[in-house]
Image 1 (cartoon, helix red, strand yellow):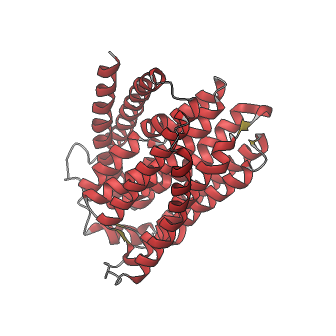
Image 2 (spheres, helix red, strand yellow):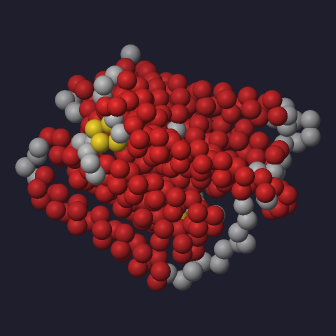
Length: 364
């Protein structure tokens, strides 16, 4: 039954992603909002619903390690695995707004989380700060998009085919219905996938923190995986990349903010392992996005392969640490020697590459 639940969860994720991407792209055209903004808000927040539910639920159950590990692990998974896999399928062209605005916001959120965690706790006031920033960021995106709605409509009219007149998905209720049903299937599929995966992990004696950083993080990120891959296959690359960046931002500000508020005066205790290692990995991979995005404004296939390899190395470290393996010490040195060089090497290689002539970037 656990295996059947796992497979059913995967099936629901695929179907939910198909409906969500279709509805979101049509809705963007109907209101003259760019697919990038839709990816950063509606799609990103919707696909992050499992992270929000799991983190808040974990806090209410007294499992704060699982709550924090889920968010940090999800952000690492989103950047390395989802962007890496999506780029392997098709090179992802990066909108200039992501480079100038959204990725710096994502990196800033990671640095802020580190600063708030230095005292070993994310308290009630910290949660209020994170939630306030999340609301302000969302409002800013909506206002920014509405100010230039006419220009956006003109930019995307040529390369985004609207629903055929009279088509069933040309109406607003149908588009909203696709989004709602798609999100519902994504959340349900993610819940089934996570519950079955945790059962497998518990049977192997894995700790709550490692489960949160890996299995639960990957499981709750399955909506992002399905949505970004489906968007990439459909040519909605702004949604594919915007979904990942927006989800990371929402996870940091929204999920942890709400979880901290739910924890009350007790706050979220930050495990030493997260503070000393995992948070730094999250910051490093966030910073690695900048040089990859800047030159040529795309994520090439080889860069996607590097991201995937890096994620496998990270998971291997977590497994060795959980098992207290004899090879942990040597691997830890190798891993820490790999994190910083990855960012530096990526920056140097990207800057030395001949810039790719990109199509005129759509202004948001």
